[in-house]
Length: 362
Image 1 (cartoon, rainbow, N blue to C red):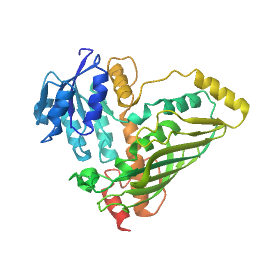
Image 2: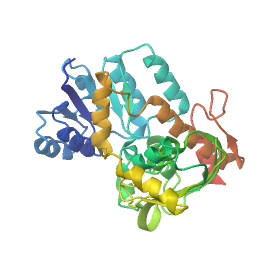
Image 3: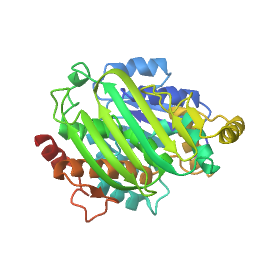
Image 4: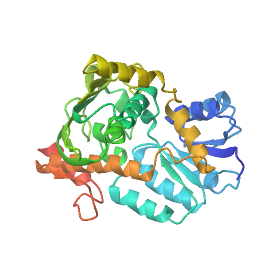
């Protein structure tokens, strides 16, 4: 395998953001083909990013010997079959969120890959930002102290224009609503920073749009460390924000509130005393800025494939995010607090579709 990996990008929607990142990493990646079905954006993107070929056939693309990585940027319901086909064809796989439609599917593909030299990397680009990483840095140094409470708000706007795309808002295609498709990155940030979840209580509703899935949600979470977290999601906010606030023993931390780049600076780190604040300031002054977003995740993935670092986002990370979704939809359907983790004995292990329907029918 050459150090410059040859890539096929599948999908011309969010795939454009991946193409921007690949273009910034031209020493590591070479996008050879852009594959999309009957999408008028395809050729324009190929011209803009100097991609030599366009295709409408996924089967033909994954059969090619000159492709090392298949990057899947298609609607959620296609992820499971496409990932399996690409792995069967001997490719490494990158896949957008949400990875699959159940925890069971993550476990099944993890078992497939356990004895393989192929890799599957889910996308969680929000992790790779200097605000998020600074908090990780302070936590690793032991400066934060015990976490008491946190809030995470994903308050965005989606209307008729967004749902004019035929597959959006349809349970069979989206697999879920705002909790799965919009807030999943923020909620991954929660588990990435704060660790395992002990239990989940939740309510979901369709209040903003005429769709088949949720567009509003409220979750109450207890972490394994005992801390309490409130998660709030709506697609009906006039002002779009993604707000993270963490109340630790020694400091309170708040992010920049920007809707689609919440992990980027500036973040505020307010110490409980002047002495603690000096230690925070000294630690942050010594912090070395990291790369951002998709570009950094893809850079680290390349390094991991050549043995110079760990895979930046793993199947376990995707499992954690989908376990939270599973627990939340089950809690909303049953009116009960759901204990974690989600295992093969859980009634929603193989999917949350029935729970979501029941929750919205209440």
